[in-house]
Amino acid sequence: MKNCGQASLEYMTMLALSLIIFVGILYIATTLITTSSIQVNVDAAYRAVQDIKESADFIYVHGHPSRIQTNIRIPSNVENITLNNKLIRLRVSVGSMYTDIYAIARGNITSNLGICSSGICREGNYLFVFTSTDPATGYDVNITVV
Image 1 (tube, helix red, strand yellow):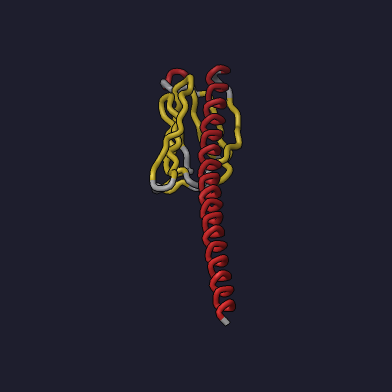
Image 2 (cartoon, rainbow, N blue to C red):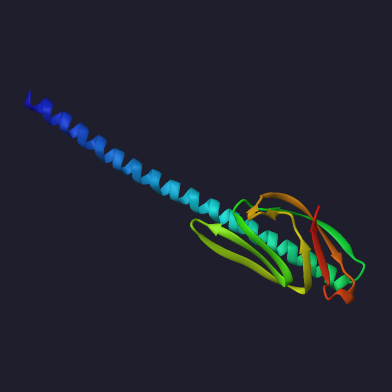
């Protein structure tokens, strides 16, 4: 009878160690998944900024009356979009903090975007229209969303 109690104690010890190892692996996997999803959203925001910059530079180089359309994906964690003068900036939430992803265009930019209305930016694919403006206005590129 004494050996039976010892065997059950050994089984409980092995079960406890197995559960501790399983919980550790589960915690590490969850952390990696969360980190990778944040990294994917930041990368998508970086690609969006670069696409906007390249299209604005294309219009600037080709001059008035150039016009192109570009499909750009805005990720879910974008808090603010700024397109003015030569600055293209997306403020992205990373956990409880923010990071700014920006680029500087060649020409002065003016924009009328309806993506971030009332402080909420909606994720999705948007059709951006880049138009060269008359040089007398002081701006080189106008960006709108269709």
